[in-house]
Amino acid sequence: MPLTLPYQFDTSGVWRSIIKGTLGLTLVITLSLLYALISRHWAAAAPLALCSAMLLFISRLFFRFQTGSAGTLSAECVVIYPNRLFWLSLPGPAGTYMLDRFSGVRVEFSMGPVEPGVQGGPNEVVWLVGRPGTPDIALARTSDGAGRGVGRELGALLNLPVQEVGAPKVIKL
Image 1 (cartoon, rainbow, N blue to C red):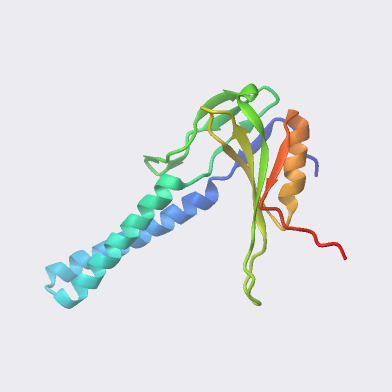
Image 2 (image 1 turned 90 degrees about the horizontal axis):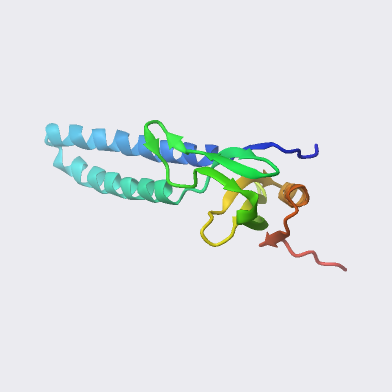
């Protein structure tokens, strides 16, 4: 199905799920730690404290480095809505950016699992690449090579060059 402008995008769902999961698990372990301390189970409290601290650290990293965003891309500008999780504002771009502040479209390819029986496959993230001082914006998450077509369509719609990073090598026999 061909892409059209205005293009609505939301690549933040994956990150919100990851952050919710790690924060939820951190809360459960922290409550277990408090129960162990109140009931004076010192042997259980020490590993729970260590797990709680590690999960809090990991949650903080996920929170800080998440790359999802939501908004609307038009022929003139991209409007990015603030990325929120519950009452927390997640870091990342927000606001309206004119298209002349972007230099291209980038498709980043990532390998999927290579073990037999493991679900998943190659996936891609399609970015709108900002010029210096303008953030890069994740426009789409795709799988199984669909990012190449999405990137080319967006590049053609926006009159921007398309770059592929980490593209699988094609071996001709």
